[in-house]
Length: 298
Image 1 (cartoon, helix red, strand yellow):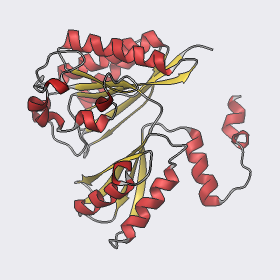
Image 2 (tube, rainbow, N blue to C red; image 1 turned 45 degrees about the horizontal axis):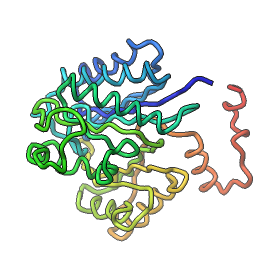
Image 3 (tube, rainbow, N blue to C red; image 1 turned 180 degrees about the vertical axis):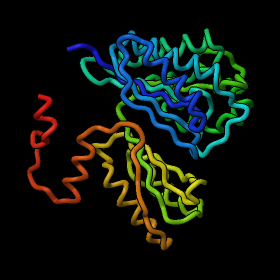
């Protein structure tokens, strides 16, 4: 079996389709890198791209994407609901088949070094690629966001792993890492009060005493005049989608606020959705082999 690694970079542009398409096109140009999905959110002002392949094409595509983003995105004018510190905000490498986490860490280190040296962008390694314990958590690395990094980067504790110890005004800074698959899952609330979403997010996320493998924050969706609890489930087998949904729904009741919908950003493992079906339908002894499409593919 060939080595397969997934890369899911996030870019600080979700409104200009010309820029988005130009960035995504860089994946299509690389032989051996397969574009699986890309999705943009105008309120977050962010695009998530997912592609997969063997290590060398993935390295090439990841760097080319970051280079194109550095050319086209100007962080001095960027505004959006999602935390961010750079044009190419995060670049995670994820082991899929016949490849170890250690190999993905090596990929992250090589791509990060190339970005820092050739694109003049401060690079921070996070999650399994972190070089310091306090850089493992992406939220800690990104704290202060783009605006705060102009001062933060001067602190020797936050000297970049590669690239200049000076903020790149146009492109910002980038976190590059290796991690297990995560699910980006958002729950929409029937209110425009962002403080309610913030309070619910604090209860749900692990740092607030909530679900062990959940990160969360409140986000305002200006176009719809509602708010959402935006979450990353970093281990869906131990913190399931349905668990996060039910906890948000329970906390929302305290404020008399209804849950009016939810969304998945990017791709998710089939098992995570099957787990939800089993939970809500109370299906007993269900097997993945009962999935029609799975049997046809086989």
